[in-house]
Amino acid sequence: MNTLRTLFLNPPSFDGFDGGAGSRYQARREVRSFWFPTWLAQPAALIPNSKLIDAPADGLQFDEVIQMAKGFDLCVLHTSTPSFASDAKVASCLKDAYPRIKVGLVGPHVAVLPGESLEAAPAADFAAREESDYTLLEIAQGRTFSEVDGISYRDCGSIRHNCDRARIEDMDSLPDVLDVYKRDLTIENYSIGYLRHPYLSLYTGRGCPARCTFCLWPQTVSGRIYRARSPARVIEDMAKAKSLFPQVKEFFFDDDTFTADLPRAARIAEGLGRLGVAWSCNSRADVPCGYLKTFKENGLRLLLVGYESGDQAVLNNVKKGVRLDVAKEFTRSCRKLGVAVHGTFILGLPGETKQTIEDTIRFACGLEVDTIQVSLAAPYPGTELYSQALHNGWFQTGGMVDADGAQSCVLSYPGLPSSEIAKGLRRMYARFYFRPKPIARMLAAMARDPEERRRRLREGAEFLRFLWSRPASVRPANGGRRLQRVPEKAGV
Image (cartoon, rainbow, N blue to C red; front, top):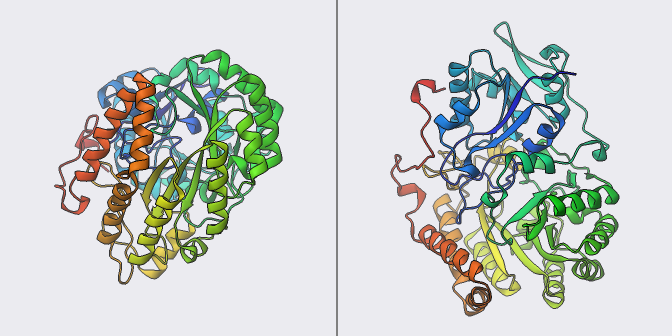
């Protein structure tokens, strides 16, 4: 069947903004980082005559992207809550340049606010809700909007909402994204400070059974049930990935929680061990030592672990489902086995106080994980945290990112203003990294590997600029740096 020539676009945004397709951290990071646009690559793999453009990672400016869109019949833009206004302008400019092109929006923001999104982005023809892989395939095949489940669309001046699309149960039915990566992406453009470079990230499943109130993807798109590819299919994909990308030093499984099904993860690990690849994944802080040992013996290098807080009451408030003593024992097992840990923490969750911030800082330092990421609580539409913030009046004025695309603190509690939470983030980074052990680890790695030395020097300079920068609340509103500003005539 012939299909529309389809462009999948992660549009230009703030300089270094890692908030597009595939990133859970929808902001410019402390150190320049980019995740692979897997959520766009997957439908692109389904549709012949498609192309994927990741403008932020490729450093493409607005005019270049508009020129590259010439000749396409359908353009699908991935958008997020912080970048939505800018992305809507890109959609408008695409329509101005190519009036006949169909423009669709995807991502968690439009999945939960489809009507509001189409009202705010008048150039968009439709918004795809839920998992949009087969939705977009049907549109590319030429079906009329009224026949396609899972979309909201314009019809004679009105916005109509079709019935929901059922989630994909057979994940093996989806093609791999590796050919799209090879065809359209420059993998060396993607880097994460705690992963070896070049790395490559993939999803082996979608959804997460945990109930965390703040987590965006399971509450908006992927769901609470972990639907995964079979171990045999994952191993087959990884053999292909190793062949297509021999330069890759580490493969990262970006499933919300790769360790949610431990027997499956162990079978995959054994296959990866036979392939001889280094790999990492997202994990909760409760994996038993026996499984950790199996993973390590079969190529596991690093776990990305969401500890979130060092206060048990805060963890209970967000339904994290992990005890601090279990997290400590898990981390001790990782250190004993030689598994590196990148710990992620969130300041400003419900129940946070000045004391719990200090408790979290001490907890992180005591864990002696290798690296950390500290985020500000971000109540995205569609999450339980968002509903709580609305109900309790916790929201402050202003957006989720500042003029530079860096994360802003939008929550405030009695006795704990947003400014105090933001200060805690910088204080936590400084207290963790400016200690002898982290400095010694970094110097040892730099001494062993010249490439690592160059990389760490660059990242260190970026990190220090972040720590010494003025708080977002006092930055000038015109201080943002974009790849190129979208023409204001296209404003929404």
